[in-house]
Image 1: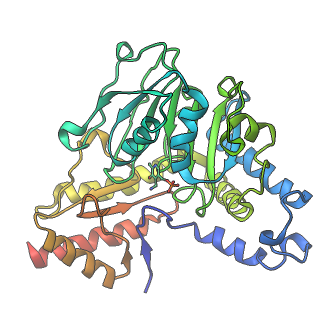
Image 2 (image 1 turned 90 degrees about the vertical axis):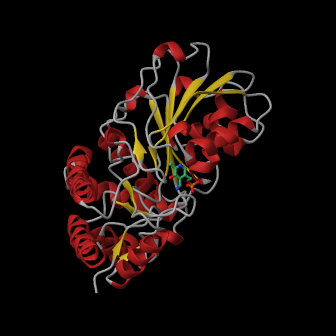
Length: 359
Ligand code: PMP
């Protein structure tokens, strides 16, 4: 039975990437060693990390004045690193769009020297939309405005990036990096955990404009963007195997035509599923249409019991990880770049069969 993995992360990886990693696993380029066993200071690994960075720069069209950092600690550590590096004794602005934005806000609020302010929220409608942000809401003295470009649990995403004027825009792009048409130059910092659209868990990508590197040293060098940038992500041992896997994913993406092709592919995949939900009398989408995510698609029936029946029946057909996040219930299909169109077609057929049997 073919397994379709709808997990929100760690998520499905491209088949050809796993195959290549398997081929190279025991003997990487004649070294007689696995990538996992290479010194991070070896020239073979230096080539891997340099190539990973170059490929990401090309894929995302990252301007010269931005650093690319390969760090650890997940997107969650960035929730603290961002305010610690940028906002001590200053104001930090946030938009509250759901579970992940809330965590970023809480991490900033936990730092006594940071003046954290939430300037917009969609909590009034249970985070089913992206609030409009206008320039006059943005205090031009603030150190940054933080947004979550795609709420992985709620299934909403920014279709357009707000204009923040002089204030740097910081984005948690964990669940739609490399799946959107955003321009890096519109952001001061972009960060993302790798385990959705980049590779295995353990790696966090940070893209930071060089004027945002802090001047004063932070108390913790591992959290200090300048230290990490100056040491080319080698201040300590980086997550070598995850970086290698990310490089393979970037090569795969490039071979398929890059991010613009992926956006089209993801529009096709998510379009099929949204159309099926909209046609259905059984399933519905809780999300405002214009803010619907391309990568994380929540849907539900009228009852928790029927949701569970659907999830169980789907699993028996090889559709794995369709259960919605425990905080919201229902179902969620995560359709990252590596998720195949055939899997969406199969799911839509299955939803129709289920509806016939239960409608
Ligand atoms: N932000 C978003 C949007 C996420 O989806 C996640 C993980 N699901 C996180 C942050 C936390 O990431 P990590 O587990 O890498 O710390």
